Length: 340
Image (cartoon, rainbow, N blue to C red; front, side):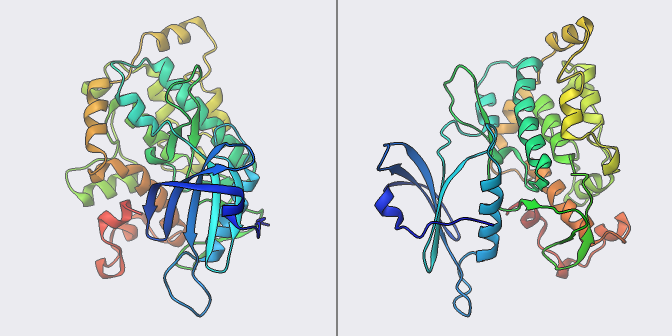
């Protein structure tokens, strides 16, 4: 159960500059009065029962808080305090100043696979801990993979934004946003990890088509290729790692634990070590990709995968073709499928 404080947040924290804003609130830099430590305060307007429709649903915020309070891990953003009043909730979170991981990588002149692996390993460590607590993120994408600091002896990756995260209980039925119950087992979808790795190594989206419809069709079919032009400096082990994640049948995908034991992440032989050391990411293409990603819709292939997880839960007994033939009048515009 989520634990909240009834104290007045201003009594314990000095409120500073606005770091960001959204539909339902703002993120501000706050300073703990007792210690002088800086944190990020997430100030959320809460929808009151029988009142205005503006604001976030209280239950959703409580779910996010409960999940974050259960996740104490070096690679997951830390929740320090939670305050509530009649119309507002304030989440005091770890202040992450290093920016997005992809932005940091794009600033480099080159990056060896061994360096990329260190980042992927931290992401997987965070996911393994989440899954060991029966929690799925459901919105893992480059924007939600951050660095604690840019300048540090050991760059520390942090997973953020648990607004769509969900905690599963054995035998429980998962209700999607449409309210349709479908049973979900312990197998947690890893498609997004495969997509992130593919993008990181090549600077390309694996499922990108010439049209929106073709792109969505590729995602549903998990259809992709390793084009030599983009993967000529990529190791065979890295491709094998991706292939074991970008699989249509979720039961055949590697778990986070299996990913961490894969030879690309944890080589066993000298030959495997040498294979990694000789390989690098396609930095020229990655820089081009990252420069466009703030506005280019194809960047959010990972978001499509995450949303298709929910679509499959709703449409479990429909064919893949059915997923592509839903009446447009009953669907969000395609760009809204990406942009949450």
